[in-house]
Length: 565
Image (cartoon, rainbow, N blue to C red):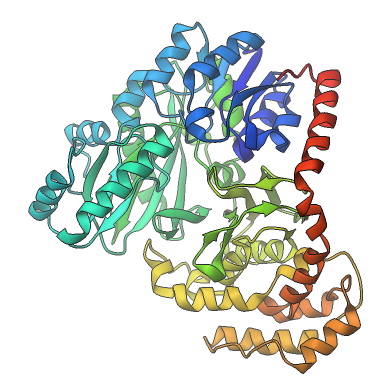
């Protein structure tokens, strides 16, 4: 078994890997930038190494520093997580050249599949259907425009070196190509260190369905069923679930065997995902992600198989002890990506300090988070704060459980996407499973209006107190308006002013407000603003407080964890 892992990532996935390693008796080394010096995952690891300044190009994308840190701390393996250098074959080769174990697939498999254009060439040769497009990176916007004219607009520009919606732009006509090409290459370079992009025909309204794979070094490759990832905004996944509401057992088996054949053709090892576009019973290869996926927890919950455990165990030389017939799906799991984005303001990023955080719990609820009260949220990295995951016996119950968990989530200090997710859980189309990758665009206006009207910020800081007058009645009325897509009336009336005078800064709604569904917390945003105003003096002196906290954390880590700067 591997003895010590350097986790070459940050946030929730770094914490997920650290916890999995600890359960296997493996020590861990965290790495951190200036912005992450007080992040929860840093304190959770056995050791921690400072990589450099906050920009990822000067820290998490510096493969040389990561390898140096691994050697310096005596780690014998590196786990890349997802994003950053996780799908960079040169980094894998450098890791192996330093006589370290890379917890992931071989560099040759990444070269063929991690590079999206090479992957298209590989699967086309194997007879797998693909969306029409290019199998080589595009050098200039003029070349991209010429190719798009042959294929026919609309088209998608996509990053060749990575996925996750980064470096992706929809181009509907030739005049949009120059700016879209520049934006896609810039974003791809920032996210993956490689600005290469390719082009695909844009399909209108398919589903995004992906197959999870697990492969050992002895020829065993298994599929663990599918995940439905069709709820997306600008090609960024927002909600994932397993299994898909539409696949039959026969279709699942067929797509699973296709994914296994693709992985076998490149000598794959470890955890990986083959993504497809599915429409009217037909499916087309989209890409293969040669790493752990953000949404892996939903597969873990329906199969009972810990994917991160098996990444580590396979890299340690273990064989998979089960067969395809042993893989069965139990119940339904769903994941919401909780991001620091404001649904009421076009999902603009929100920054600041998390002043209060209370996470949901109860039967069938899981929280994979990378933040805590006191965490500083910056613009340097992806806005993902945490993943809220639920599991239940049926999809209907999973939706209700997610709705309940979202209502329990309390986070104040930065805006989050939670109110949007709650609006989705209430939407009749989503509840019926009638979704595709354009579902968000079709329903965005009503969803965001409902999310804005929810005004959950007050509940995010709930710490006890008296109920506001008429809270339950107002919540019920506003919920009914939201369901009918009616506009919500102005909340800043005389009743609001009187309620705030009576409750002052510390009073919150009681459970009576919960009966109102989406609008259960009436007037709460104003209440939250009053509470946050009290913290203004702390913000003005934030630098001094952070310096004090940093000295305390340095002392604690030095004494307990063997931490070094």
